[in-house]
Length: 376
Image (cartoon, rainbow, N blue to C red; front, top):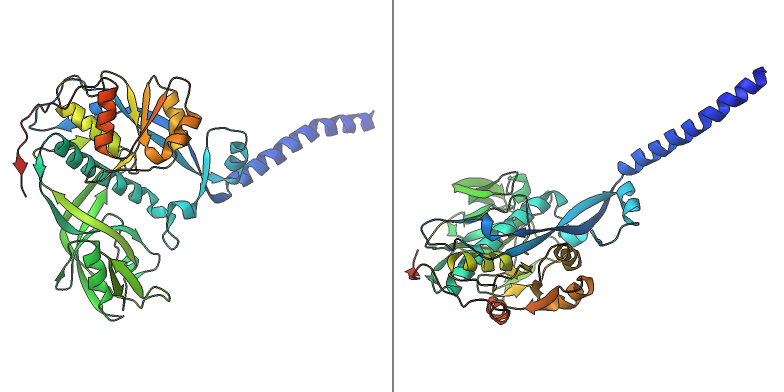
């Protein structure tokens, strides 16, 4: 009898031991972070209700124009294993997202800066399409990436900061920053005047007045002694370890607020541009059709390609949108992932997008406020 009792207890313990082992394995795999990220379908968000405009007349019944986002998730070993049984996703590595030598911790700030740039381009392009004459002025060099252990990193320079002066040299754009640093010998003391950025948890960016940042230039890494900017080859004698873009001041006739909380990246540029035009114009820009849009927008009305188009198309396919406007180069990918009845239309410029909307029954642009010239 005693032997039978022992066998019975062993039978009870065995499943429990297996369960504990499985849970321990899952826990261990979930703690193993990978350098792989998954892009999965996000949501389609109607943009016009997110826009607030001061001082200009607005359309009380703007069109339904949706931006489309995706989710970007860093995978651990367990989530990677589970992802193999899921559809509608794309895998990228950390090297696809940030330049080698730049920490992935800068990714969120870079995304919010790209969104800020997209908003500025949307405002400028929309107002110009409405007939406004706008003045754009260079304002400095905006930092887009800081290399690990570089002089800039040690001095506390971050993504989004805007450099306006290096020692006695005024910096108007990214080329100006490169030239100002490149001509200095290595180990030169530098006083940089920098507009420091504050980025809220929601991704809202604000800049302060210029403040002095002290650092020293470093020797140029091997193989990086020459650079180019504006078509000119520049011989570099030192560097501080940053990437930058042109800062632009734009004189606008009103203050615009576009609520894109927690959304980063540049791909909502075209959607925001069309939404602003719809908001500031009479009639229906889309002919009352619900549309989704993905594409970058620059200050001159050009539409650029975006990432995650397949996953964005899946997100749009879950809505009642009849049209999905994408960059021309990504039409084939979108069509391969679209539901029946969703029409994919490719464009390369804002002008082409407006022509498309006229063809589907939209009204011509009719500014609600008479446009004038605006100067800084």
